[in-house]
Image (cartoon, rainbow, N blue to C red; front, side, top):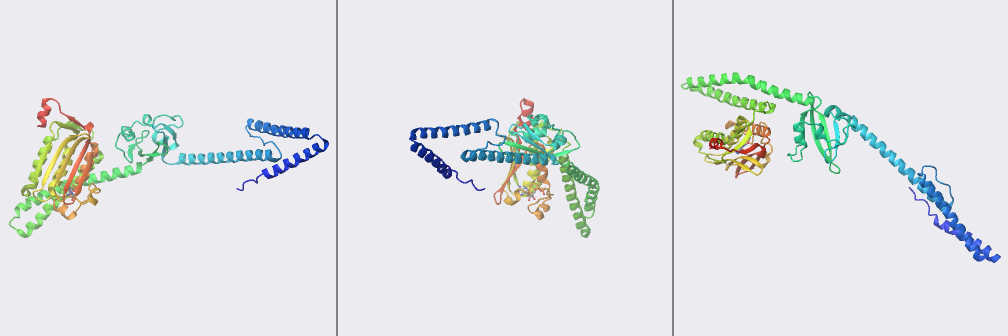
Length: 444
Ligand code: ADP
């Protein structure tokens, strides 16, 4: 936009012309001083009058048309008026934009809730009512954790809990609906809570789990029969080498399938979470001693040196048979995937963060690029070698799931040529020192 032309040269010229004319006439008539005073008086009165009109116009809100005035005052009135009109137009445009954003956010199929730094509700869309049971605007200013009381949600929102990308939980208003909730920080310590209806995905996931569980379950009996028959035949056919090798292969393969089916069943049991309630305090000392003994048997002539460093009297809250499978997978892996004579240390101790179980070996280690994927189902570093050693590729996936159900985390450190360290970290709330002689005796 072009700036308006500078009015001052014309204004000064006009004032000079008037002043000179008045002074010339006054001088000619012999009233020069009186003419000068009258001139200044008139100028002052004129400017005061315009100032009064301006103040009056502003006092009335500047809503009416601006006063009409010639010259500089006219320019000032029009300039102020145009500026006000522009500001009003901008405000109206912004309001329309805001309304449009609100309308589109309201129409979103996902719940959107704007939270202040204290998690108090500043705004919520219509879907938030259907999915989360929020009542907008009645719930404005209320804390979201006072309205959505699901324990998992409270933990998800707790700033002291480990951060999670998303949380899956049933809707607080309709238990048939499943939601995926995310918390996105934005602006000045504000948060956007988004909840998406994932019922159809949840149903598919349940179907997938049920399918795997059912298939595994159905396969288990025929496989056990197959294995048993192959084992008996193997004993019978020892003197018929041409048949013996085939039957031996049959026995080995059916055993592998049995292991696979057992691991799949274990994984689906862990995923469905039905056993979560059966958690109790126990001392893992005996369990670890037994595992070390079994690992020595597994190693056999390969002669691994397995050491147990067990802090006595340290109890954990959990499901014993689940934790046993997890620890067994780690200890047996250390035997399976390291060469004969390798030193393996199994540690159970308390750290400032909580309970800590580590299995450390001086074996060949694992290349860095595998580490992130090790806990995926069927992920193997070297699939040929792993299968030779009876691995199903599900062991570390089971460990991860067991730890998830115990609020724990698996940390894997490994370096080629230096060995590996698999550590399970449990939170301090799941750890206690046994008091009383009975418990200490049990731990020894
Ligand atoms: P599996 O059930 O087949 O043993 P896991 O999920 O337990 O499979 O382990 C995945 C892969 O991690 C294995 O294929 C193996 O190559 C590797 N691995 C696990 N533990 C160790 C270890 N202590 N040292 C070297 N490699 C290991």
